[in-house]
Image (cartoon, rainbow, N blue to C red; front, side):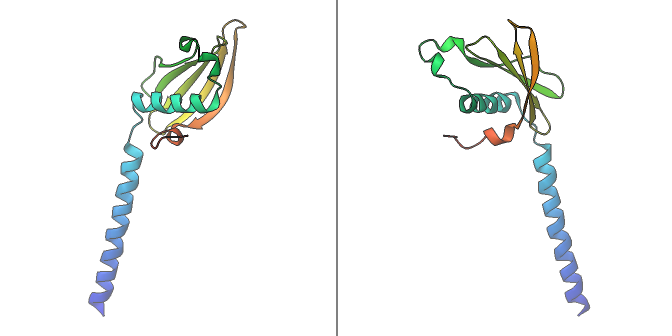
Length: 124
């Protein structure tokens, strides 16, 4: 009976340590610049109307900006001349958006997304 109990406890400890290892592995995967750009590009193609760029694709774009040690900056330029700056946290993927309208000198918080929601499998 003692051996069965010890075997059971050992099995439980082994399973718990495996799960903890996977959680640490998932948290340690940093969002790369390429991932940030891909995720923001997918988000922008879902959230914004790109029909204005059908005849002139250069009027709308998604490009990398200057990031920091903790954030990637991705810039969406609208056909209206407005910009949306996406600040993607490298560790978590949490992304805050700031809209800037240069013609009016207005800058406002525009919400948040999780970049992981726009990575991976192709979206429709």
